[in-house]
Image: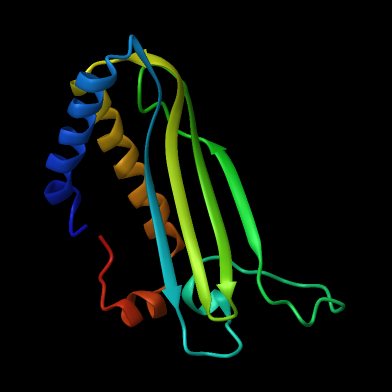
Length: 149
């Protein structure tokens, strides 16, 4: 994955093939999901240095090996039908590995139409990108060699 524009032909191909092979009368879920794994060399990771997200732990939890927080929000009205949600999971696999998993999707009966579904996936992509960008501090951008969109 380099850019959405580069990846979009693959998305269109998969959706088109699915509709041709499965021939559903409706589609019950469409979404776009980013799963990002960040690895840090620091033994004690200060999340606020890299993410616009802080975590205060009570004193008895001094031997924390990891955490898993999930935020579930209503998504903006990006598609005409379905229940739209954004599920953001912020977790660690090891002390220095952080997972940022953002899933923007619609559940419900939607038309089995390739144009509709590709448009929905693109709109969800744009929202996922906004959510992703909103989490990053400048120190993480510098570490990744990235600039803000």
